[in-house]
Length: 141
Length: 401
Image (cartoon, each protein chain N blue to C red):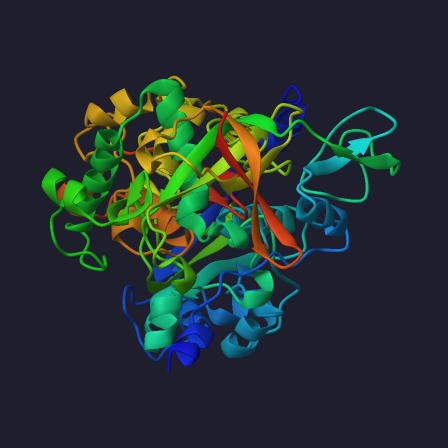
């Protein structure tokens, strides 16, 4: 019975990469935060795509970033939109602005939900959620 | 990253000022209308708009609409139901900004000689879609799976439109000291309006206590910050101003319009607190030769309370950051400085992605409402549309002829 219950427990969705984002998730699995950086103009961008949205160059390198940033804005989920988060509410989803400029959605962890603020400094941590899959999350710096 | 807004194009568009009019408006049954598809709701609204205008169906030679998110070739399905062919016919894809855009396209088509009488509309079955079965109710999702994000969101538990807009609300609160009290006033004002509208879905008064007791959805939003899941449709008919003068309704002229699209993304730049309503509104004001002080009533796209607050600022009804004080002054009420969403809006009347707000703007300018529902001496109405992934915007300025 216990096994059956475990098998039926709703699972959180894993990221389903696009062709452009595969290297991002491969780096994350190795606990490295890497995003595209343009060889022509030096611009960093996110989410990944095959050309620089600043100069349209297609020459770029996956580049490790500092993992430091700040909470640009955040929300607190009270409603359970997906049954796998039943035990997690309330939880924070934040828009993180990396030191290098780009912004990304993530969770802020390691701090009570009611203490998260806009512009709070944070740093990346990695959550190994499945074999070969780690999610970059953020914690107070 | 936004470039300096070049309004010379709006000067060119001012040639289109007052050349076309809205000659008919109609809505379907609103609220919970089980067993009727969104297509048939829209046809019901179109039938009512045709009757309202006094135009015969055979005169309609243009259709511009936006369909439910999972219908292909929506305008074709509507044309088939109306039993007409059309010289000019298409479907738009700018979310809640599509409805005003459909009127803009109608004006272009009429002025270019590609159509004479264009019907525009939008219908939605969001209540039925999310309540047809228990599974649908729990999933509470109006979009088909193919249109939902696959990464950079769902793995973090990020779902739904309330969260996307709540990010903007939170940032605005941090920058300008905006509070949930301000959001409450917006929700209460529109509910008060809805109580005077017999078609509105919401029938009960809302107090401040009701607002603060409401279930939190995605903070800072509670249930009452969120627009309705409803079934309903609206439609309007656009024709030349000359034609409008021979028809049965008092003509309502299309004085100005604008669009803007912050395609770099809602989460980029400062788009969450300086929305595309700013440049869209400037374009529309310039075309109309009017400014915010000339507007007598506003119908602002209210998918969420916060979106009203920021758009009031972006449209220049108050300064950026002062939207909270502006709404707290009672400005949005029928007796306030700017009676807004006078039908109850999408928060309390029905959510048909802005189409019903266009109908309401027209009705206010016809001066046919009983006095309690009538924005006093309204000569100019501003209507906004917002949508897509929060970055598409459109503005319509109407005037009583």
